[in-house]
Length: 379
Image (cartoon, rainbow, N blue to C red; front, side, top):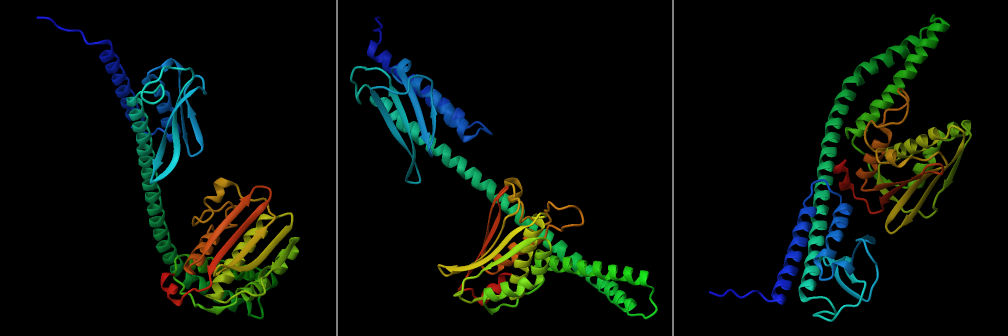
């Protein structure tokens, strides 16, 4: 019995097919590596591509994704090029390029084989699937982190409310008896001085409890139609003298035609006081704080900008986290900005922070003009 040997063309075709399958298998292995970054995956894929083409010794591969390029070794330019777009959600996010650095005889697509067109398209789809899978994993992790954060906030809120209510009564007794003792006519001067310290400490503790209650959303808002400029002007009474004493210039830049909004003036007053006090505390050597208002696109904006030392990026990510503070023990509770964030969101607004180390910090609060009374139920 005679066995015919396969022709050279059949052997060559089988060899090319093995190279293609090896490339696709290698891509699947790289894409499935746990813990590998997208940069590592794309660089690994681009290095697998040249050996899968007909002339690997003159083949150069390049993957461009979201403006970042990943390349194989070898010449980066040549007379022949084959490309495929990386399409994700109907949008081209990048491209795969296969380049021959030298002239080669014509085949199905220039010097490229029909199978190579199928291969580059398959690789482009595989890259797109890998990116989509990575993005889905990242979105899932972000969602879990948000859920954990919300759960922590709820737990902290319940704890804060319980602690505040438990402390309110004994603190009221301490403050009341201290005030009564201070009114006694025969109290020695030294004792009177100590009683005044007790009163001062009690009042400070009461303010902390108020912040805890606001953070825990135990204080119902009393919303009414207000002019934000009036709130700003009323608030300046609380800190203008303090800023002047510390060498800080306090500037108002209020828009004259500001529309009214439905809001709780006491809570917005607390927002402004917290932001200005934080800014003043950051500028021990003096500086400038500018409070401005403006309206745009059915929103009004309240901005507090300082010329302080600025906030580093790692701290900026945590400033709204309850009880996070960079101040020394006894100098801060870490609740001020958490309370600010809660008040702003309860009014249907948003707060943005822009800070650069050495140049200062800018807080911008956006509040809707057409705020509705129903928002009270969300607070």
